Image (cartoon, rainbow, N blue to C red; front, side, top):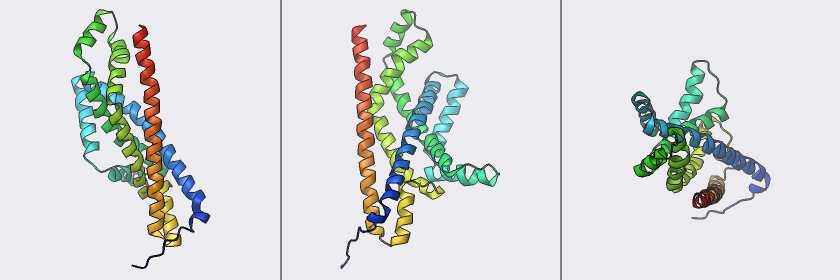
Length: 227
């Protein structure tokens, strides 16, 4: 094997790669925020809502978790376009990611909610807290803290899944790599670079979320101790 590695294309294309990485990061942050909010709301409905609502959420979660993300993205981008509903590529990409990650977040948060001891709920009710206050002050903080490592892992996987959005023309990191490869014919090298960038983004996201969790949960424990 006489293969000569050549990374000279980086000199002319590093700005494109940086823009693609920045867009990937922005998509990830938007998806994390929206997916977490939606997933938490659905988890609350699934554990404490009326029977018909619980069945609807269960159906939503089962459908999303048992169909490929790329098909969900195609449906939002190409399927809606077929019925004359035009959704921009970036909007369709973020929406597909939010829908997908919210289903997994629902199950993670649901497990956290169900892990809170029932005695704590009864004690909070005896103190005169309303059902909403019990949920907001007692249940959700503990549920999120207990399941936070699982949430971090899920959100990192979601960030890596943004690469699938290149299939609907979202100009994220992988799409930029496709274009550079077609221009330079250095596929091996460009995908090595892209893999390294994804690795760095994964570390950055994991460390950032771990830092946020450390600050938020430490503050909550201090308030709990003070009370």
